Image (cartoon, rainbow, N blue to C red; front, side):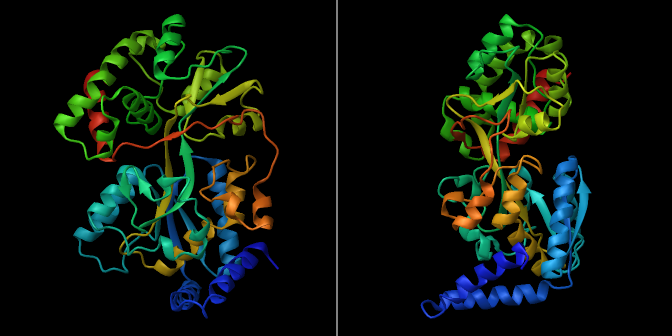
Length: 403
């Protein structure tokens, strides 16, 4: 029996087995069986970032499994920015399209894009907790699986993968790793021109700025609330003082910045820079495996923690194939799919599941050898500021440093 089908049947049977004890479990099992029947034959247009060959290949594998086991056709609609999809769905609502006449069935999303879709009523009814595989999600150890950039998900999106700001450098060139933004400033002063970060509003660049904000804000708890002009001024003033001190010592004197993290990574690989950054703790290991980085490159996170979040999939309010979208979301949460995604040789995206709670045979899928470049020890995850801070920070950064 194919492992995907086996996993799905076991989960459904576990629900069915509880029907004698709880009417809710019987209803849940019946509802999911109805969803599976309705999904068969549907095409799910999954709007997802297409900037990685590994991710694209993973989705091709997922599409083949979904078609074979559930009769659902997964169509990867390749996008460069989820914000463009949000605008499209908003335009469809403004045009008064019916609830089954949209162009998007599923979207890869988080942060300010999720906050905007939730605020504007662009999402379908809550569905995440009704997925059979949601039972394995690590909601206790990783609260970001239920709170997206300080905005409660309320079941409107299903967790897919984890991310946390991670730095990497060649140990031969940088044996002493900075453990905070303050130590990074000290390093930049001693090695002028060999440190930088991507230019906001590039996601990685904005994340660097948010990390500095968290480390310097007078009241970190204020960052969990929607931004106001007064809060921005009070909490970000130390941030701008820090960046004012840092920028003169950066690559090209802080007058220019790499366009993205890939450019920064290449500059680090070429020896022009001392370090690079990523939001995937396994990226350096991926690059070493692909022979694009030296095996002496090591990854680390700041001692007191780095900013982290969960990325999700969500269903728009007007998705034509809502049942199929739920089947896809549930499959993406399956131990088999999550373990494959976490595999360095496939993608290397950390799982959202609580592996320790999985059945032994499923838990074994996640056991593998530690690869060169993998993070030796994870640091605490610092929660993202409220989604509304992103635009405010990017605009102020551009005003100060963008010219």
